[in-house]
Image (tube, one colour):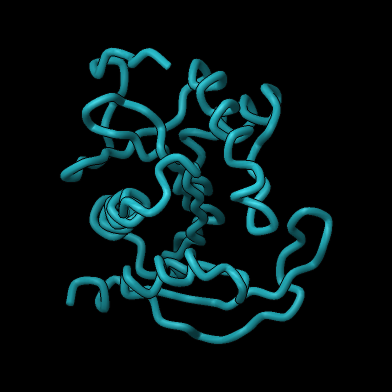
Length: 184
């Protein structure tokens, strides 16, 4: 897929190899191609938007007070390598959000998701001024569990039949990171 000029995208955070940016409607073709290529890699853990209509609904949520979608992109080519979102952002006394993420199979095992997710965590605590980020991960999803551990999240417990993913209620481990723990 040809690279898009870097000036087109506002970078939210930049790391050594990747940067974060919001999705835009013109990303649909690249995004959906990556989702098709990674479908068996994602299942049963996540079911990302798989149609143009679903992608449009996802991308149009940029700017919402309760949802913060972002793509992890390679600095040198602008290719999308993963997705990392904050959802159900609650302000007031709570200052909390849920973290969701998934990578694309062709970039698996290179640490790009860790780097990109670290960028979103930094953005969440420094720019969005959140106090708590919670990640809910299915107990058999070893890659995602390794990622949240590597980012410093602490396991809080197990939530039986917590989320309906792919038409089935699935158990999830609850992992959380607080701003003051992240600063250490």
